[in-house]
Length: 240
Image 1: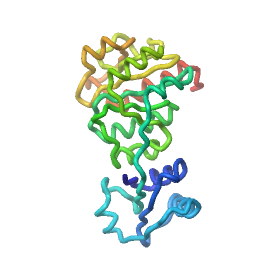
Image 2 (image 1 turned 180 degrees about the vertical axis):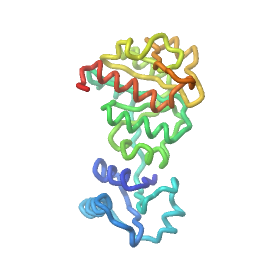
Image 3 (image 1 turned 60 degrees about the horizontal axis):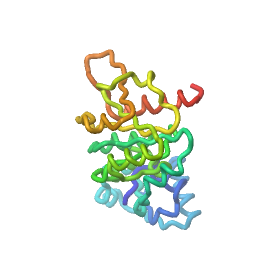
């Protein structure tokens, strides 16, 4: 798997250098502090570096935004959702992304999950982690657990373990700040153009919405997720 761009490559080297197999760097690249640290960490961990022409990077790039550096990483580990739930802390936060096909949104949610200290981001088995997702996460994918699990299996595991299941939906029963989001919670967010089905809604302990004052009837899914995740932190006692 390719990791492209200075921030994602640097974060991968900082967090999990043992998973980086090789780094391609543009020859005559303009070096900034990030590039200097990339080279320094690669040398420290004895990771092979190859200095190549920009047309080579352009050919192998999956995102078209390599910024002069591409790292080759081993596959992300396969993690157990059940184990994550069983080993969770008192204020655990999980985010389940329901069938999103927008790689930027997936990456943005992973980035927000890392910033809020979430235990894991859960994806449906159909959703893939691509170089574009990793780049959009700005390297956060190296620091937050990413799990593939069927939605109804995940809901059952949560219910069995006493984890609250909260849907985020424009037609929710109450505003997010009116709901009790303390303790262990798994949020479920729908795809870009799909609401949560009645079957999913009926299995949620609560379904929350975000107040909207404009003419557009919904927020971008990554923005909506971030709003609710940060309110959970507030309710858990984080100073803001």
